[in-house]
Image 1 (cartoon, helix red, strand yellow):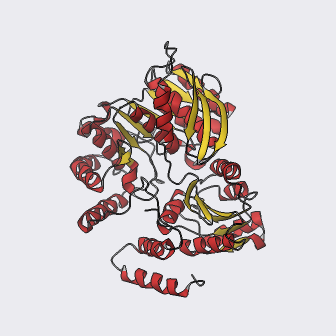
Image 2: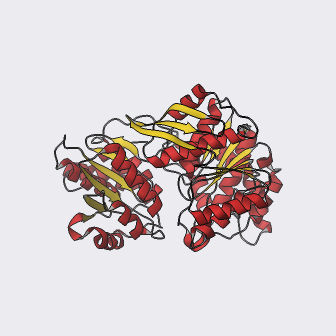
Length: 499
């Protein structure tokens, strides 16, 4: 942080003082204190910070440390045997409520949040399970539209730990990080109890740990190439794995898909005697226009049209997610299955107007405007690039990019190249993060040497990008987009004071 020597001294002092903390978190949280004064007053949002109570914070860190000893989310053994065993000893909590199950490549979390908002608006108690988290692990399990409290998260973990240990002892491999969290979510939902669970798969479908539920509605967001080493090299291969969430007699809500992926899904639906609702056929977008703070939609649902829907999210992809979410909730309520009616349009409008999706074209600062987007594959990057271009009209856009090493990084960079005047490459604190110099080498191939800046530390990268944007002067309309990974976005939120 050479531009501000006093801030640099303060930053180093804070990091040095945090000797009993995880070193990466120490850097992130120290950086947030030095950058916060430059980013304005944070607005309230639903992404929780660390617990204020030191004892609760200590207990939550112990839970996180315990979970970290297990297989991470990128190490998988394609089987539901362990999670099924856990459900068995817990008394099958996932059978205590109906579920809406969501798979796909991009848009799952935003769609889940929209479904949750719609169900809650119709006075149903909801549980939502999504991944990965932006800042706090507690975000993954939500009740009534908000992450569970740290205290409840800790209590749930402690409650199921004896059963987890029992299953561990009887299996070839211990339950993984994601499997334990899935067990916690299903137990928390049964304990609440919820009226309906909205569940996002972790990866794939057939052997995903979430796939011990019988979702009466199976939602498939757009399928594209991602996790090809585990799910397959073509959209059809990936669709075959994701189609595993389709249960007998369910309703399948299909977003627009590549032709080969759609064919696989339709074949699976026929085999399962499931009803299919297809975007562009049985439901879809009638009209869409950019509005201040989001967009104004007319949606065609399974039962009819819904006009004057304000969605406070940016980008055409979010409008498509909204259409899918509406159809899923209609299907859950039986609309379209011989019921030619719409849901109450006023309730639908209120629900969509309340939707938030942190880290998805989210504005976290003004003057210059800083936008965060968790795009981590080429399809997500293309959607984000289109959304930024349509909704913000920046005269000059600076990119801050930190990616995971196991992604199609060059494809992601190529998607952003047309909209970035310059790119600041960096890395997040994850062990999966691509080294900044390796990322820079790929960026130079795409952008050319004169448009690439390397800042290995994320706080320095943010400051460099903000400085580049400010060079056009305060009123010139330049902006910053931080992207490449959910982890990068989460850490940037902390650094910019959104905690």
